[in-house]
Amino acid sequence: MKYNIIFAFSFSTSCLLFALILLSSSVIPSATITSSSTPVMASVDDNQEDDDDNDKENTRDNDDEDDDGTNDDIDIDELNLLQICCAWSDKISDGVLEYRISGEGDEDSKQSVRNAIQDWDLLIDNLIFVEKQDDNSNEADLEIGFSDSNEDANDEEFDYGDPIAAGKTEFNFDDKGFIDSIEVTLSGGIFGDRFQNSELEQIARHEIGHVLGLGHANFDGNLMSESTDGGTGNISTCEVNGVLAANYWRLVDVSNNPQYPEAHFVVC
Image (cartoon, rainbow, N blue to C red):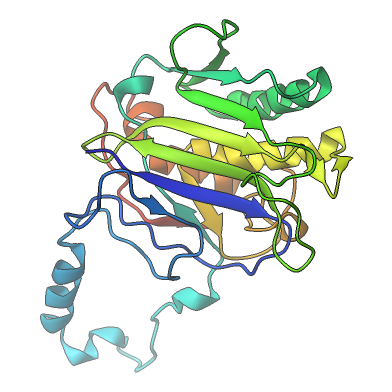
């Protein structure tokens, strides 16, 4: 059974934390969960919600208060959070993530994508990106393409009244719920005008963050913010920590056995 998840990076959308149910008996093969899903935290374990309820029932009423009577509960809505989406399968157990850039984009656009990948590559240990040059070879782990300059990354014509997708990342999962392959689509431009190289690099860095297991941030001023006007082009320590948490089994433990992320988000 395989299914996929799509993250879209837009020009004007509100920031929210997406629900991603990675392992659920109700998931339909090849189903798509879009980035407009209900803003609640998802559990990697189907039984996590029940366990949480049991924990609450077994907790004494005064556990929420210190001896001095103060309440130290953390209001999660007030925290700057970066969502952890998912982990790669054993496709990266050799420490290599192969990618291929399709032939539609011009050479400057392709180089902007390579620059964005290199930025991530330099910050993540125990994993290297390797570009596949042969268009006729087998599929790469990561396929990167470009939409038409008159369309957004969803292959939809520009509509001034709707958000415009600057980039789209589509995950394909194996039957165990690990990332098996990914397709990234980058907009060739906006309203018929080609992106500046720096803009395209920012969009590509954002999408590569998804490729490495990140969801969206629930605040502005972060590379993984949901919209371009709310984010930054730089990769911060927060994003690096999120990637390490998402793929801890490979990037930290240097194991050959994929494991699901233990956390749903990191605090930035």
